[in-house]
Image: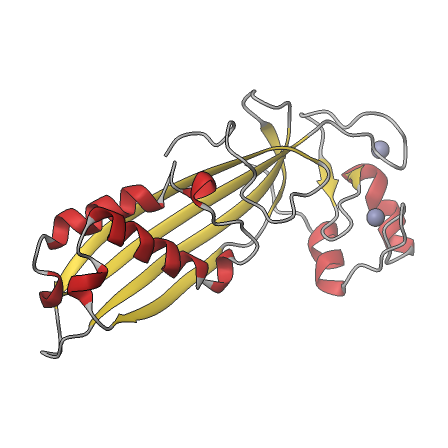
Length: 219
Ligand SMILES: [Zn+2]
Ligand SMILES: [Zn+2]
């Protein structure tokens, strides 16, 4: 649950414009009496991953969100063949949680080595799984509700159109894919004429164009 500032980046490929990456995770574990009397148990991993991009300075509280990706749902079901062995110790629970995270497609862009993840999630989850099962691992199915928030803080950048700095209180926007950044007021007239990034000419898919031209209302 700690801030990830001193940890290695959790991304396999950290975006080049990123100055800092913070990860926050929350998990609750619920056990349920098994529906089937056989030996296997089932672990369900459910939840959401939300990634957002903010403009700010490393270490300071970032303001001005410049892009928030649509939440990605997590729903994976893991049959556990030998629950007593799999959950025999806290360490074994931790290994099992790590394995499940590695097999979760939504998380494939992340480097799931222990240094990146134990601090805020798997070890904590493993502890709760271990405590809630005791030596009765064979009797329960387990639901793990997982919410993960990833915030990429990007360095102040220049708008590639007007060449003045993008500052926190201005309406800045970063294009998905190429990551070039602009003032919205500079970018919109361009996009009305061309369907490309003004900087690198990457072609913007129509759904991206639509969301750029119709930004959500600020609260
Ligand atoms: Zn500009
Ligand atoms: Zn570009």
